[in-house]
Length: 116
Image (cartoon, rainbow, N blue to C red):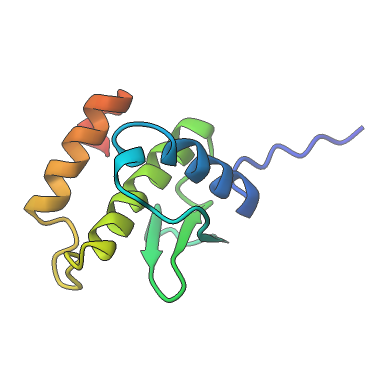
């Protein structure tokens, strides 16, 4: 019997998003119930957020375990939050606002801020 060990799938990204959306600090951010999800194999990125429609993309070239998946989805959820607040900059997506939200997310969920 062959076992499929794929961690990063469109469904797993959505499930990570839905779980995180119910947790602090995300539960106070009024994020959409559903987002589109996409899987790519792009060594230049871990993940990305795109609007119209709201889409979280995760790269299997960099993300291959559950811990990385959840942390990367959380990272992209901060960009979604920035977008909803009209604070997402094309030129500097990791601005002071992002860094403060990342600090809060890392404290609340126990992520390593240095690698977030």
